[in-house]
Length: 138
Image 1 (tube, rainbow, N blue to C red):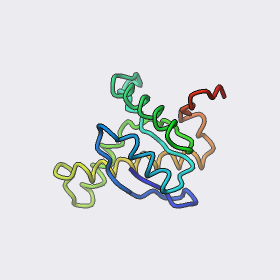
Image 2: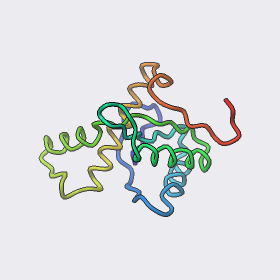
Image 3: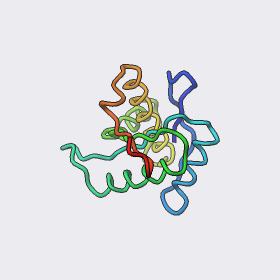
C-alpha cells in the first residue's frame, strides 16, 4: 500500500497487506484510519490490454473494498508498475529479488504516483474506472 500527502503531490509506501483471508478488510481499515478520500486498486492487464483472471480478482477486491470504505474506489492500469519499481530499486543499488514486500510497496508508490499525475492533469475519469457501490446506480 501507498499513500499521498494531503495535497496529492507525492506518494510514499505505507504497508504490505498479504493476499488472503481478511485482506480487503485490512485495506479498508487502513483507508479509514488514514481518512482516505480515494483508493486506487491496480488493475493487472496483459500487455495487449486484455484482462485475465488476475484482473477479475482485482475487480472483485475493489468491489468488496467499495462496500467497506467510504472512500471513492477506482481501478487503474498497473502494467509495468513492478518493473518500474524494480528498476528504480536497482538504480538505487538495492536488490528487489530478496525484498518482495519492499518491491510490492514500491510498485504501490508507482501506481499511486501515476494516479496522482493523471488526476492533476484532469484525466482521472478517462484513465481510471470508478467502482460503484451496491445499490448505487450513478
